[in-house]
Length: 228
Image (cartoon, rainbow, N blue to C red):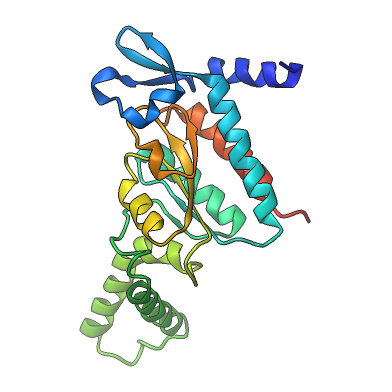
């Protein structure tokens, strides 16, 4: 084992990447990534975490040359801020609030909805609602604000993505199932309660730990960041 790899494994252990869920929540697909159990808590093998993380990063490095469209999804409270910040920095679409059913499998409908939302935004910015009576204008503006948190992050989703990256395979299972149906490459962080079989590139790790998420997502961001 190289010195760099040893240091990274020590770091993973230090930040608690290896702590999974209690055994009642065990998913059979994660068996190959589990080192053992401690006080009924499943312990993830950090050597495999690092191995799978590096596989995902290597894939992203290769795909980067093709300017892939990567779609980030992380709706659990601990992941939301990470996903929003990273996606905005990288200029990629994301979901941090709620997965809208059919986002991928019914993409034409979602595209029409996004087009309409974008037109409303542009009209509002140009003062296109100023001539309307107050009651109607207020109603339209409220509708825009209601839709904003769900649709604005999707405006960059101008086609089906090349890669779907999720934080918490269990929480985002619907998104992963849709991606698999559409033959979209899937990758993401999968704890011991998630279905690793839904991921082409599973990264076995604690998905309820801020430091764990930060470590992995920073690595992903570094690979995808465009050189100035």
